[in-house]
Image 1 (cartoon, helix red, strand yellow):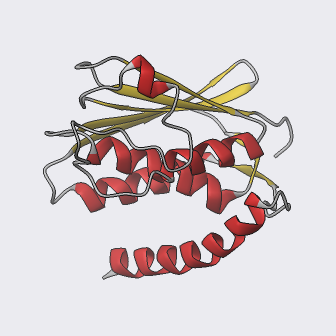
Image 2 (tube, one colour; image 1 turned 90 degrees about the horizontal axis):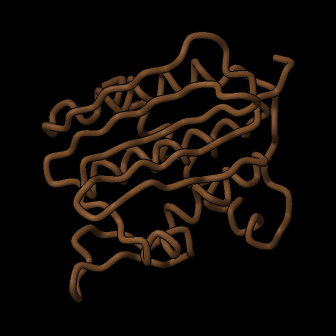
Image 3 (tube, one colour; image 1 turned 90 degrees about the vertical axis):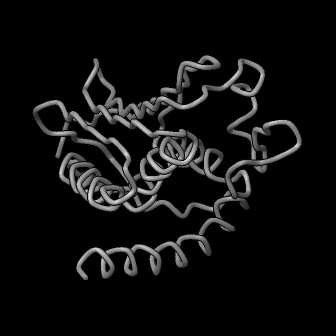
Length: 186
């Protein structure tokens, strides 16, 4: 019941934030950045994801480096971006094995999501962050969607002055890493 309540609350927030996204596309400022330790939010997100997928036969692990993750963030959108990466890793793998790792490297917080899926061709890697672009398998899309998720992730991460990187090869899975600048004050 608690999980259902959390997901209903998250869905309600999604509706509000979708309305804000139209402002984002019009280049209006919708992100309300605040100084936070993002680690507790990320840990909670991982625990919720683990609980939700536990009945689906999905293998999930996460490793969060010790210490604070002091960043300036719009928590709701950044959580949704990470959640989108986790959800994609699960959806695009036949027998999903998903892993999340977060660590501080230099002046960046790096959050990586890895999967054991089909992988993404070099050609598609250059296009997957484009709005409405979807990778096809022949003439079919195996997973329902609109091609908005990874574009959203990119927009959110760039609004946090960060970047998104992909490491993938056909038949070898995919690793997507988001990098967000660490802020000294929390």
